[in-house]
Length: 151
Image (tube, rainbow, N blue to C red; front, side, top):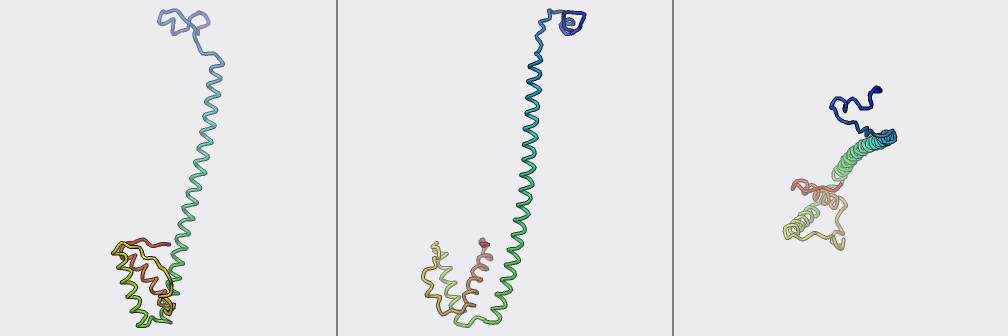
């Protein structure tokens, strides 16, 4: 507003009557307060995002560490199993039984039936080395065929 005129400069330039419908100080204060609230909420949300990103980064690092531990454990167990196999090699009977069980397992897979281990009695009399070798051979066949391996 020009202090010398009753009209605002915009209305004076346009040659029209000035309605003087300006926003009140209360409206401007409400607007300012609302902007401050939004800015505070935005800052809080950004801080939460930063905390979540840090948590995600930490969890990914922990997951990587655990996978590496699992691989080291697998390497260790494989080395122990190899040493046990050197000390207690499979007998001809054990190899024949392993072949029979592998064929039976393959037959179950081809028929679409799931293999359910029932009574462990058929496994009695087999050496611990044979059972370990059988279990190890099952996982290596699965890997060769593209199957997934449980951790």
